[in-house]
Image 1 (cartoon, rainbow, N blue to C red):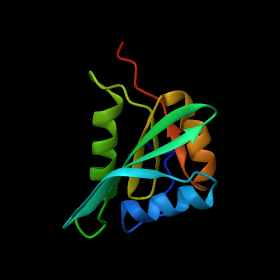
Image 2: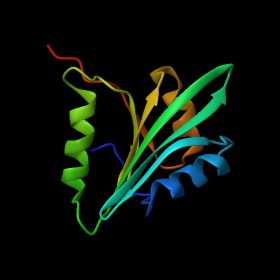
Image 3: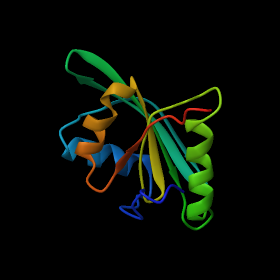
Length: 121
């Protein structure tokens, strides 16, 4: 896990992240939602500055996954062929598309940080 990612807040499900986004001013349309024994994910679409912003939310259970394992999942998305812009904290992360809006999503989620894609040298 990158050292600048806060240890909290932690969420129990993707629905909790969606509720936090709503509290921060972003009401979501949720076309995809999945619950698993050790986590959940969802796609949260918001209209922002005339653009549809897609937030692919992943929440990993702290009963099953360590902080390092959450970090490994995040790292795999930021590097290689994916190069995704991620908003993260605690046991969850969001792939924000387009990435230009990641800072706006992070501002709605207190305690989160934006992780830019990793550039391979």
